[in-house]
Length: 238
Image 1 (cartoon, rainbow, N blue to C red):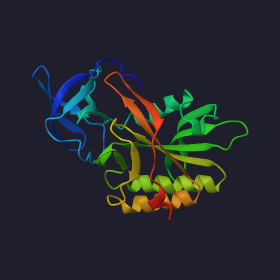
Image 2: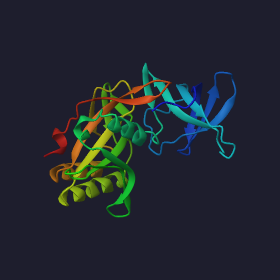
Image 3: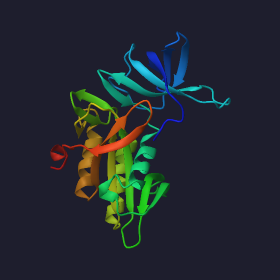
Image 4: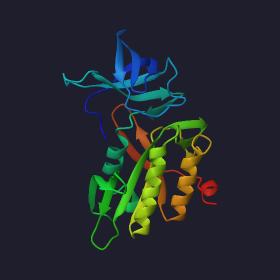
């Protein structure tokens, strides 16, 4: 995924009301940007960090700027949770996700389960349908260890149940965690933050739901899926 135009650098003043961020641009002007991230952004909202913004030319938008990236201790981090589905879709179509490379057809936002939509539905003649749920990851509390979630996610637990249901019906179901930060070398679940999600994940694994974790290459030009990283599954498969 490439950004449509060069990003604009600034310094974070504060993030508030979940979807707003006050930022000082390099030219000294103060702006309020849209923060497309409903999570807690634990460890990612301290004032003074360098951030990168996109700017929309749409005159109907209330906020022209969107917060896309940040720099933290030498790492680049993507904070826009609207991007992961597109990043993964592009990677699958390019054959970069080996676990699902056999599928020739991809559809987005297909209805399934109980009033839900699957992020990506993969189909192919002679193959079971493959339901792919994408989760954005950018929490890092221990050096090198990315974690999910960064706040309680009842919706995420519901998706795990519905993915398990798809496996019971004879399909494949994949939970793909996309780590949008360049300083992560491994991944685990933050069971202390949301024990119910961790329990739902363990049950989903028992029912046959697959789980994969991929890192990203991140720059001010764009974000692309890079390579798989280890998932410490052991605590959640008892």
